[in-house]
Amino acid sequence: MSFESPGAVLRRHGLWARKSWGQNFLHAPDVHAAIVAAAGARAGVRVIEIGAGVGSLTHGLLATGAEVWAIERDRDLCAVLRHEFAGAERLRLFEADAVRFDYASAADAEHPRPTIVGNLPYHLTGPLMFALLDHHATTGDWIVMVQREVAERIVAPPGSRTYGGLSVVLGRVRVLEWVTAVSPGAFLPPPKVDSAVIRLRPREQPLGEVASESGFRALVRAAFQQRRKTLANALSSLAGRPAAQRWCERTGIDPAIRPEKLAPAQFAALQRAREQDPPSPSSSDAGADDGAASDDDLAEQGS
Image (cartoon, rainbow, N blue to C red; front, side, top):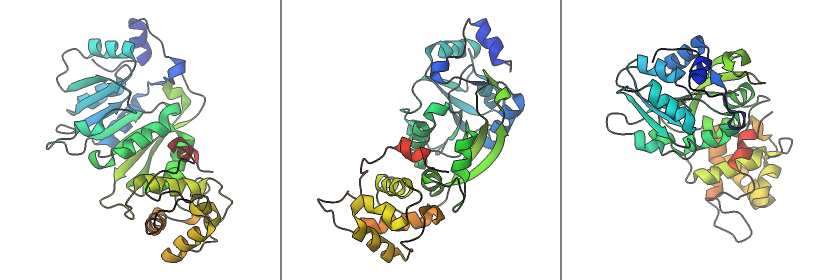
């Protein structure tokens, strides 16, 4: 298959974009090229593509000599891909939900950390980012298209207006980079919001170790749930004000500081201090998610 407009492919197969599934097909060759370049796709590289659609980006990836594992949950689009890419030797197609996909299954001795690329459905950005985060250790660079507002939150530095929980949990283990902005006209049909491509590269070492990732997320969520609160007041929702004060004292962090001023490593230090406390029936377990908010809530925190 050579590159052609997604609209032409859809018409040929008698299909159209499903609005209820958040389908917006990227049809700008320059943006496809930017994603392929940012992914470093080439012979010997394995790329997992989230939401292959009608195969426009798939074609660009295969043209570099890369091996592509394409995930698409739409049964009709999977039929399109099988037809359009019949005989493609370096393509594996998975009719699956990308949120539940086993990304670790793509890692092997030859490809220990496959690259992730994708135009993420905006209503599933949070679940998909946290699904990838759960597979951080077995995935390489992530190059993803998201709503511009979300992209700005993710790459925001500490102290900025848009810095939030998603910036912290991703920034602790990933280097966050802006690739390019994308206008609505680059899609079919055009969405009502601007988009952006970002790259998240794995750090050689996390910015601070923690024993419990879920506990760390719970702490970060609590810190950013009410941005106007001081750190100690915000964290008191986890185990009470005395415990929050104790964590701040152990780490040398000012309990009166606003959470958005702290870097990811400082949040990790607070979680380690929290993990030193013995479990108490009256407080949340430092090694477990307290259930006060979901990962979706964490993804929305910022600005």
